[in-house]
Length: 517
Image 1: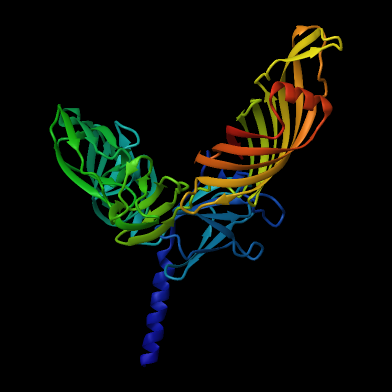
Image 2: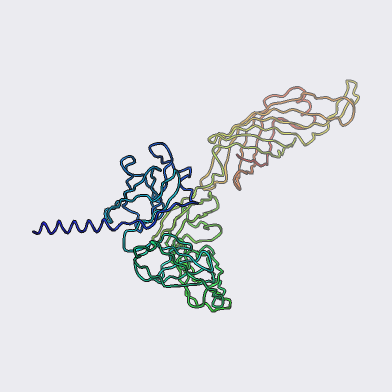
């Protein structure tokens, strides 16, 4: 007996469920071209475009749509609160099933067309589809019992049976009404239309300017973002609330009262940033530090900062500048160690160009080119003579004066040295040098008409010490004392140097500057 009772109860529940699903409306959407959109690729068994049926229901999950033996279960897509069903244009019956609401076999009241769009209002029982509109102002914000549902016109909004308070707001226009959703009679319209009459409430509104100190903070009113930093609007008299919001911050809440027909200035509470702590150690200590531009910070102690990623600039004389990015996390302490690298003022591997003034009995200006390869210094220089020698007189065999001349000396030198550097004096280097130099004399007639001493030349071994001081990167100053030991002299050089009082063996001092690369 108990088993029979259960079977009867199950049968009755099935009958009830079967009767829940109804189609309140099926119609062609004449201006809807969705079914012809390029992205719609579904085709019927003949290769033609399917008809597109947009199904509206209080719940869209769990429905299946069967198009018959030929089509089988139809392809569907979910778009917001709609189910798009793609049916062959030759179809006549649509079977709709749901595990909770039962099953219905629906015969299309009109013939389907290829690529056309239709709407089907599927009722699960206990309510009706409502169309909302506003009179006196378009695009009014509709709320039902305080719950916002959208802007007019609103079509196919499903509501359970009952009584509701409907309000509409658009700028300075407002309206309201009572909506009673009741079960339709047998011959009634399955859809309900509800229009809200809007009235101008300008006399009850005031101008409002809401500002927040942080220009990047969003201003939220009635759940929607309305501006950032500053919001100018008109609001109805009474008490209102705005929320200021920003990423990684707690919201700021401000209540204010609007007076009608006047300007209301509101200073909103800014969002409170989430914070974290940083503790940065540096090697060496006592660096100069800034963050996010030119904001100074003392890194010898911890700091509390708003969460986010900061770029720090760490500087100290004699070290390369470091620009690390450090992230501050909420309620956490970020610990980091930044090591600054020493500047290599005197580099073991470099190329250089420069010049010097050479001080000796035949002074001149030198151009210098060279390179240091792992402390091995190879240098080439050419000196343009500037100082004139003493006058040299040339006589004929009979003792008559032929010509009086003076001479300048040009020098081409090749030098090799080894560079020594000091840990405590990192901007100083000493380079002992040995080299080979050739001397060439260039004569200038003071009186007479005949030039003498052409091709006068000599060579010498050079021994010197180059002392380099680097005040800042890529630029060096140097002084280089040197002694030259003559190796060879041709006859002209011997005669001229003897009469002019100079020699290839000599002491000199070069003072100059080098630019390193």
